Amino acid sequence: MKGFYLILSLILFLTGCGTSSSPDFGSAEFKKDDYKMITEGNNQFAFDLLNELVTNKEEPNKFFSPFSIHSALSMTYNGAAGDTQQEMAKVLHLNSYQQVDINRAYASFLSRTLERDYDATLNIANSLWLKAGYPFLEDFITKTEDYYLAMVSEMDFSDTKTADEINKWVKQKTNGKIEEMIENIDANTVAYLINAIYFYGVWEHSFDKRQTFEDTFYGRDNNSKQQAFMRQTYPFNYYENEQIQAIDLPYKDNELSMIVMLPKEGASLDDFYEQLTFEQWAKWVRQFNKQEVSITLPKFKMDYSTNLNDSLINLGMPSAFSGNADFSNMVKNGGVYIDEVLHKSYIEVNEKGTEAAAATSVEMKETASPVMKIMNVNRPFFFVIQDNESEIILFMGEINSPD
Image 1: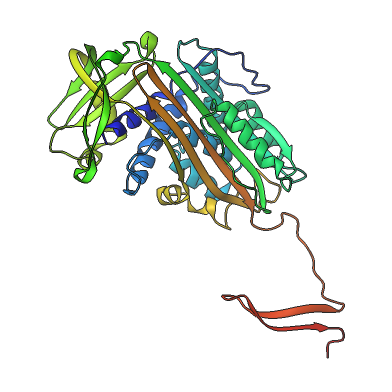
Image 2 (image 1 turned 90 degrees about the vertical axis):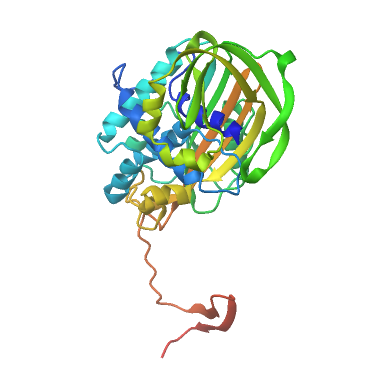
């Protein structure tokens, strides 16, 4: 489980780095520091979601990008209205801002990350896949395209090649680490809003492979296994109290870091989580100072996949997943809801550095046709009466001339 602390730390630094590019934000207007409006909200959301995910003890390891999830849901939030909008704003910790402020903040963050030049690589990409001919509102599409730099594609969702195209895009944007985001497209699916993120960073102080050794990793429930461990000694930013040890492991140029937090001997991760909040995290990190530290760190590689529906409903946005969802700012007359929020991720940590990728897909389905249909049964018709649980047809008939 020690490897999980690496995963936890990576959650936060993914929100603050970028590579060089020349983005075109179209008609989007924003200021350089507008990104600050989503920084705290994203990080609070990260810890809220962590608390939900760690309750699942069947998965021994977990790894996710809160930024990817927050981004995909923020794009979706642009189409929300009424109670659905209010619930999503609360869960995303954005209820202090107007929608226009959130859009400006994301554009500011993307501009900042794309224009900065790091030795590390961070690629962030958004896309909006729309069912061709469906009555999406132009304002929603324009905001997603301009503020989130989303690639917008209208597709034939009945064509099996469309899922292949979406998966191809995700695979490309995650450098091949996430190959299949979507298995197939249901008949009533009308849109996918997808964020993809890829990170690769080399340690500022790399681990010498000659010092890597095999030793015992003591996992949860007294399960132990042999594991490859990396080792080095160096003056790192470090913090320790009666409950934890914490270390800041910088990537090249010291502009990005992995922060590892380790409960003291005799304490469990569950004990640690009882203390862990966004506020407590910030308090601990502020107390780091330079000390000579001998660090032993496990090498690991993992894939992770999770459906976030239940977690997001538990956090307080149930209406978005129901027939009562209000996405009337996305589709003319509404009539759509979130069917699934799927998150997939990958990470590898070794002597040289860290490679990580994640993708989040928000699948929108229709609850009813956005245009009212009229059925006037004024001519011969066929009917059945069935037992719905077994789907056994009990009666069948036709009416040509009702009495």
